[in-house]
Amino acid sequence: MPNAHKRLDQRAMADSMELSSDVPPASAALTAEFVAEQSSSFDADPKLRLAQNAVTRSDVRDVLMRRDVSNSFNHHYSVKVAQECKVTDQKRTGRCWIFAALNVMRLGIMNKFSLADDFELSQSYLFFWDKLEKCNYFLENVLLTKDKPLDGRLLQHLLKEPICDGGQWDMVTNLMGKYGAVPKSVFPESKTSMNSVWVNRFLTAKLREYALRLRGMAGKGAVEADLHKAKADMMAEVYKVLSVHFGAVPKPDSKFEWAITNKHKAFKREEHTPLGFYRDLVDTKADQMVSIIHDPRNPYRRSYSVSYLGNVVGGDIVRYINLPIEELKRYAAATLDGGQPCWMGVDVFKSYHIELGILDTGMYDHDLVYGVSPGMTKEERLRSGESLMSHAMVFTGYDKRDGENIPNKWRVENSWGDTRGNKGYFLMTNAWFDEYLFQVVVNKSLLDKDLLPLLTDEPTMLPAWDPMGSLASVGRQEHQQQDGGGGLRMREGNVADPRCRI
Image (cartoon, rainbow, N blue to C red; front, side):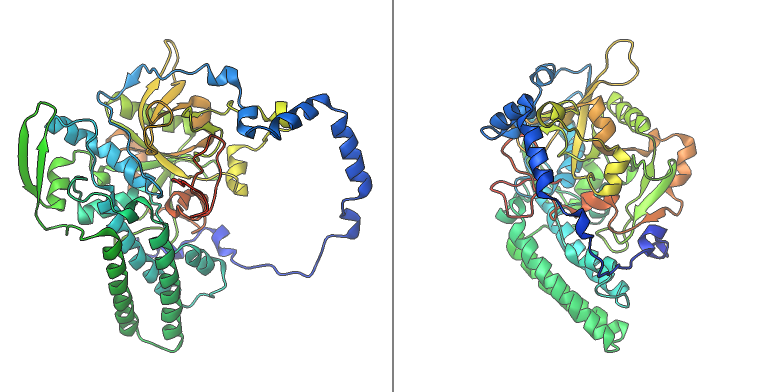
């Protein structure tokens, strides 16, 4: 959108770093008397001593978990989509947003051709083009900010993670509108598409190198034509690296053969291009959808975007409509009532148990074990950096008891394989929805009429580092440890089997 980056929120304009030689006063230091007093108090509390014995010998999450809560759930729902699919697996990558989007879209094709429940659209195909486009988008942002200080907050934010695995729904819209889609059988996974750590590290180093080179040229007075020529040479190198890692990717207008055998043993062969396949066979079009968020920091019933966030230069901006949480529930339920799954974004690492596949705020009893409980509101967690969107998944159902107006639990299709939860499906309680869900994506046709102008107005811009853009920054904070349920944010490559921070 024209001038969008110039309309930064005032919070983003406070880009100064306060330097000070002040230090805390000596009187604020911890004393031996304080430590002795706390030690005596701890030793005098038998409940804390029991907790100490348990936690020093067991996984703290097992000690914290409330058995009565975990035993109270079942995976039965009053409303479900007519056909569910075999759960997918994003492996050691942050592609949840792509997986979730394609999991929504594959259902129509499966029904149209009577395909088995393990049919998938190629996540690797979109992953390749997203990597290429993100590199170009980053370098264009470098040129846009060439006059800003290198050590300022904005440039340091852009350089911290110039390429990552994460994304947003509007970024799916950009990719599919430009490149289409193909079945997974046409462009299957590669070693890199299942473990992106190495290519991300290499391209991150190159992009930082390119950024300094472009800024150096600009500082010496290079004209725009020379800067873009240099950028084109850089992108040629990026294309070579990605092609080595992903293989020969189908071009959006090149023909491919798709051969299938359906559930009834009937064989069929068709010829498509990626753009034609998306246009003709995918019923759920990405650009027909709208992202609705719950951000209690900012006024409701307004549109928002995040500065410098995107993937395709010239594509759609990432646009959100901010509404109260009950409205997100209403729109998600309406989508499921219409027989369609619903894409959503959450902070998945809070109050969850991965083995059981349960997302519930009452899962862990911190007060019983520590004598201390978390005490922040959703807004406070956002403001302090304690919470952000970290994962995208799909609603496929909900349960609502007779006489109740809102669901008490939601069925969630994840993309972490089928060994956790209910064959890979998770259960989300209504209370967890309130606290840790931030976004749902629904068809524009469901929007209340008074919200329609927000689809085309000029949005309020949030700063580049705002948590509403965090789902598109997967790779820095995330990767999830797959050894149980508490949730742990790690840097890439530091865990044995990382998954999405998403």
